[in-house]
Length: 347
Image (cartoon, rainbow, N blue to C red; front, side):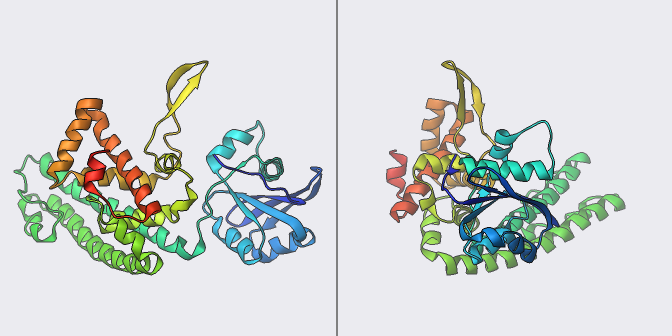
């Protein structure tokens, strides 16, 4: 957890919503200079802080509408801090809660150097990252449709399809296997939607790939040298990490990727783990997928997994493999070296 500890003359806490924002400005003595509900508009915000712009820092909680405020502060050369929503909730929880109280608490935490920071993702790559996240959402919906067809086939105790219907060439005649016209229509609707998703996903992937090559083609190449990390996973990792130098150590990186379990200890005794949902869920998914694909057509990788199973047990082997792939990616990006299978397997 990183806190913002720089000193300023004025501290501005913003409880931000889609159409409104409650603004609180404190001085160094902690006195409230402004405490007002405003429309969530750039002109209204700049007008409210005009008298304090000489040395002010602005802080808002990390929620879905922070983009415009961060971009506005960057454009106007105003320091902006994005607060980690989960950590902030733990720090400033109280009995009473409303916008007025929350904005004052944000400003007070900012002044005290107790704002846990979230990463302010740069505007230049943010839209592409969000498009890639949308692509993954659409892919999951496509997977739901394929699962529904398979479940329907099992529901009526029909023979297996024999081929993977994820491929378009294998989907011919699937709906006709169901004798009931209503069931056939249901499966046909699924197949039609899957065809639409296939075309849409291909278009999105080509668009994102062009953007990625424009931003950092070398990092994209390095990521794809890892067995199991292809076009889509390399894009996810590239855009979710953005700049690997923001992680001082490999431990910080794998923690952000949710690849480690943090122990809960008190009085020298362990009480399980914590923080499983703190970090980047998209990187967690990417490295978990990479660990599974790493084993495909990879005899050396299978032997490595068997070694892990023998030492740690079957249930933990894949998690450890994902963790070690995360470590390997960190060192690859920091040292700008391609993946070395021999070095990885001997680690």
